[in-house]
Image 1 (cartoon, rainbow, N blue to C red):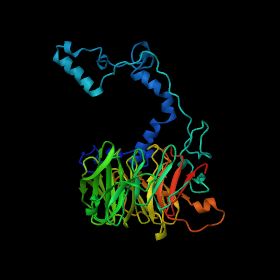
Image 2 (tube, rainbow, N blue to C red):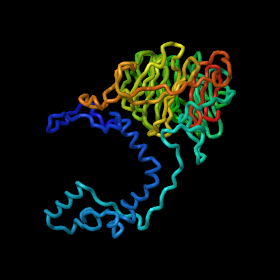
Image 3 (tube, rainbow, N blue to C red):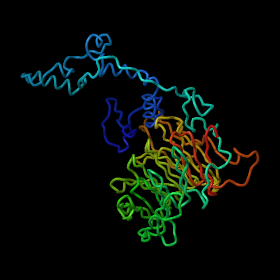
Image 4 (cartoon, helix red, strand yellow):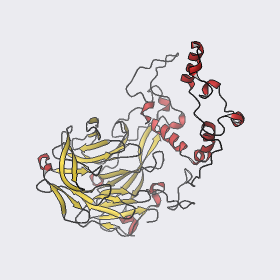
Length: 478
């Protein structure tokens, strides 16, 4: 995590000889004063083709044929004998001064690892990738590998007709499997990892039920949620856990019990108190063991998914929360409130925020993040809005300027004395996706509000569901 580069807790590390107080790590100019950019570019470099094609040379130096002998001499890879574990036997050294000297060397500089290979390590086969800075014109590169849809958002095209339809109203949840597209209406979610069952809520008697996907027949009905008011949102991070909340403002974590692979009960595992008003949206990440709840009290709360305890709060939203999402690759959190869009770190630090529109017709209803590779500079945030338009946003670094609007004051990323190196992160609109404009030559009837978003596993397709039950697929090939 980039957080170790900033002294956010204001610990006193002393000062330099010239009196400069030590605080945040001063980053090189190419990092634009942003710890996240610093880490991301390092990750990008480590995953680059250049590193991949030369990785075997490093293996030869550290673990292989150039670690010892004449090959090590030729590669200028020779160290003091104390650094070679098989050259020194500390148990046979009786002089305490020599022994402490050797231990001091090892403690300060380490030891050479054991040699694993006696022959040169073979090179790695590297797939041809898109050259950074050049926009691909097609959905695949020269090697035939499919490119992510966000590499060239201006080339995205929707399917002429809906790839799937949900009969009973607005689309609530979409899952793109290897074989097909699965979808259910509002107040329903698909249960992982098989996606063959659904969990539904929102009934007049406050009950909930499990059904087989594609069937109206209930497998089992539960009335345990009735004591917690009207359920407004729910999610299933695992096959045995259900998280729900609503008008009670309490986030409830439920556990499904099974007898011979059949669901028999739903028991309350933990009730999480923290919000003052109804909870309107939920998100969870098993990778980062975190739950995020958004409320009408204009706050988000982070909860520990394993310990089921409060972690921190994301305050200062300008409107009631309408959508939240978490990246499983970076841990970044997106929260949406009205027309406002916010990006946070997993530790609750605000990275950037923006007001996406000035009219209520463009309120954000759903969101998601691309997470193919954390270090990829092309990654975007996807928002689905009430006006039926999908908007793609990306992070850009810029020098501070007075004309750029921010919904909240940005957190400092460098020592305030180093203002010359301090850049700000901004959310910039990079593409708008409008089905009507893309499919029809002339404007058809008004777009249906976007109610659900999903991304295919290889990130080549973006699936968009609307309030009319239609699901369109955007890709470079249409």
